[in-house]
Length: 44
Image (cartoon, rainbow, N blue to C red):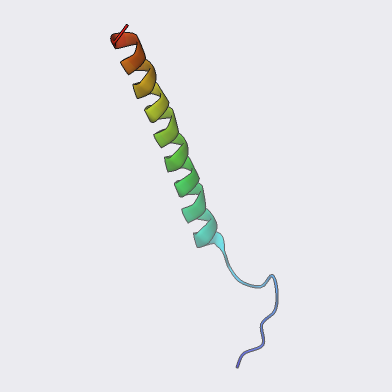
């Protein structure tokens, strides 16, 4: 087995994927809140 050296793994791809996930989740939450506000105002 190869020796593992902590901190030597290239994680740029994982960081990029996580950033995309956080961005998508944030926009999803913003859009959901916007839809709920619109529905509340349209039903008033």
